[in-house]
Length: 188
Length: 188
DNA sequence: TGACGTTTTTGATCTGGATCAATGCCAGGG
DNA sequence: CCCTGGCATTGATCCAGATCAAAAACGTCA
Image (cartoon, rainbow over all chains, first blue to last red; front, side):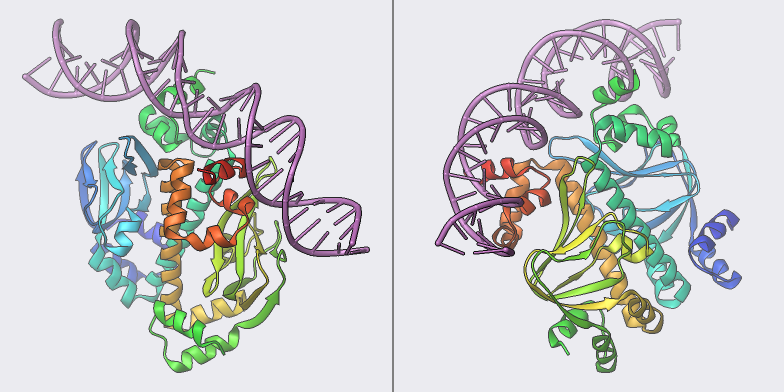
């Protein structure tokens, strides 16, 4: 059982030890190699993840064939392809590992059973959704108000780990620019 | 008491009549004239709205002084400046009426009391958050993958009311383009 | 170790939509 | 009823970032 995960959970809701036990039992360990696909386009996302160590990201592919990275999970963070997971509908988002990654996976069935049975889990999920919404709101605001360079500088200031650990290609797609533009931004 | 509102609520969760009664009592009627500000930048959003008839929108203003419309509520829809409302923090989003509007307002205190006391309200709120998230996800995808013209055509196809009822200036800001570009798009 | 496929970098060119500018238009307040 | 300030249209120009092209650097696996 992961005390790290418990620690994170407690950050969102006031779980007691019995609840934490039950939740921890539902999360199944999994190890994936770099570049493993955890969810392909068109498949239904059936798992929610806690990343112990490593890096997952969600992205989608445009008609023109370009990757667009949407969300990155580094060590000790949680997430999934939320839109597909929530609705249990085929996903346009893809989920893959950017590094060799150790993670804990919670099935959709267990997730929603917990949501039915534990009031604290409802609270947890509500917080997650609120955060996810606010995060996206921020993304939209940034995309609309900042230039490519300003977006790069913002990540450099707030999230330098991303710059260290993602390839330039993926980082560029996260910033919604081309690798060429990113390369030019970096060289000044 | 609004049966329309009850109808909408039932769409999200299985409220019984007693619950609907209690909820309806919390929503206070309000009438606002076109161009009324319901929330200014920097203020904390303290109300959640049901629009009976009319039109509200949220938007923010960039450093360059441009309006960016983010969400529009026409007749029989619900919403608020969610980021500020959830966190009870000062808002960068502004809320105003685009037409003379009849609405019902639910205070933050009542909203969260209902959320504490009624399981069905929790369910309702969870669905709202899930929808809001998915909606934003779609916005981001559209903004990144579609040209200005394609975005216009998509609204024309899926949401023609917006084109009929919003001024071109506001519609342009909703599409993330300038009024000049919108004018040119329409004239072909 | 070497060879191939993927990144990264650098340079030249292109373009969608923004910006700037000018004119006509309409609606609402005095 | 008329005036005024915002809205809409049209034209000319500009620019951030994309695209295209072609080396150079990098990893990784036989």
